[in-house]
Image (cartoon, rainbow, N blue to C red):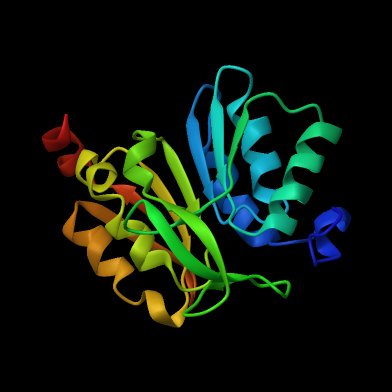
Length: 196
């Protein structure tokens, strides 16, 4: 993939372990969020898995990454993806963003970007989040989604996001660590019944 920054994206070896764990969780007709979509590696995968009856919302604040993402969607003739060019945080508004390198992130200085809350996009079936340390902010902006106890989450955690596992467990999710920094959180059965 052009702009992906990883040769494994086009060789088929990129994040192979994560892909193997995520694929069984996604079914046709689902709604999925790709938070930190970058150039679209996970977005394209999710698009294929949810099929024509499903939908993917891809969030990406970096202009370069968002441009590459749109190009990949066009090349692959993808019609079930909405691109939101904004940073996901705990509020709708603006924030500073550093995107001069492969890894872009919220910062105290840099370009001003739009910010959005996940709660403003409804309750999806699946959310993948990898946003370089802003994962806690994303969860704080997803209180309604957390309370619904319907969504399965895949989080790539960074040092700044140490609150995330506790936030998920407090809201009725069980956690499976897929690596020292990555987790899948699924609704507890009892919590799911209470949330209905």
